Image (cartoon, rainbow, N blue to C red; front, side, top):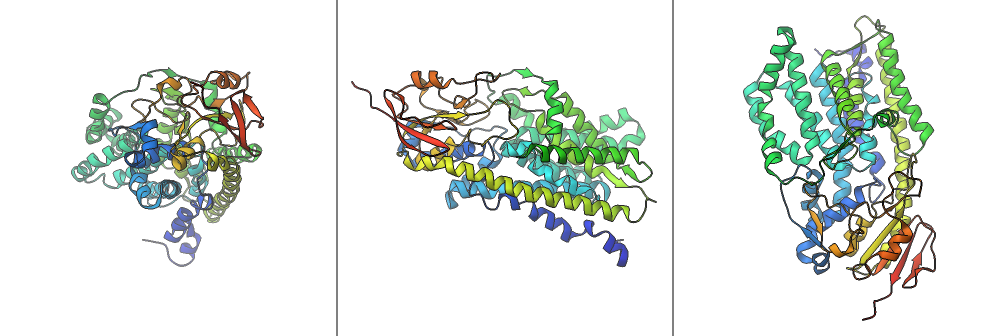
Length: 505
């Protein structure tokens, strides 16, 4: 029975009003920027525009091919495609992106209630992880799939007593998760298996594992698409054990290093207090098991896998978020403990929301300054993009994929979009432009960097003048000329645009 009177007032954090307030508040940092200033998102916008406008744009048809196929990386693409036709690709992308943190927070709330029947007073500590590193990097398909996986897991737990109905429901649900992003499908399958093992563990771990595996068979249909579909050429696997510690420290990496590190440290300090003070705190067995399995998966995953980067990093925030949900005041703890913990957690969420809002506004201002060059690019032009990227920095100016906006607004050809077979559906039509053809050829790192891709002087000397008739630099000081045939036509403090003189025949 729900509490009444004073007990109900002490448990305000479990109310529907509190849940909805947190869900809506998670949208606030993205309300004002016209384009959500996430690192990769402008490049995705360019791809969405090609998918939508290619049939009616001769300029796009000269530059790009786009062939729909069934791949496990289409979540936001499929949502933006119809919405972009109605409202334009940039607004559609903003609306879909705006919904992702809200879905993530709502998924955490639903998971906590499904597993424990209530919401931990510490739950709000987990809500800022909706803006963790994967979201800041602009991995929007993954983050959408992760949010949907949390909702799916909550429903999986609630329907545990109706296995036939659950199986029928989750055959299409698992396929939807895989199409959104294959990592989200894998995450859900792993945690659904864990939840069923925990449910039946009293009959022995081997028996519980066998039963859980049997119950998860309806989730395996996407394996057919994975085994029969087109795979990319990159099958490399690479681990970086030192980075695993870095990603944990950088859980809330956004703009201000000392502040972000202090916030992440505060989360780990809370875990330390909960573990040390076992008289006051306990860990819910189901949520705790889900967190432990998620953390073990984080440790087991490589950094690079099948052409995808930062594979392990994507798991860290989810593991910590579920672990925070697992922390509960122990029965018999002082009455004031839970309300005070809820106030501290809510204050932390409000603080991070305020600073995330400020950070997004600052990132957006920098991007908008650099994007002023797009108005000077003729429609259908070929543009060689070169972006000055630092080696190691807590935050960058997030200019590395702004060239996607030139595609969306000017039907341009640029060298910074992704075109990995089996991962994206867009293909450039200018093979002669190689090696300045796709991402990461637009990124210019300083000489000491380990991850150098493009040398500025070499690119200016060697780029294909038949493909590119403009050069757009970001983060470099403007110069009257980059070469005898590459002259400055516009610049500001962030970017510069150069025209390439026509070749003489």
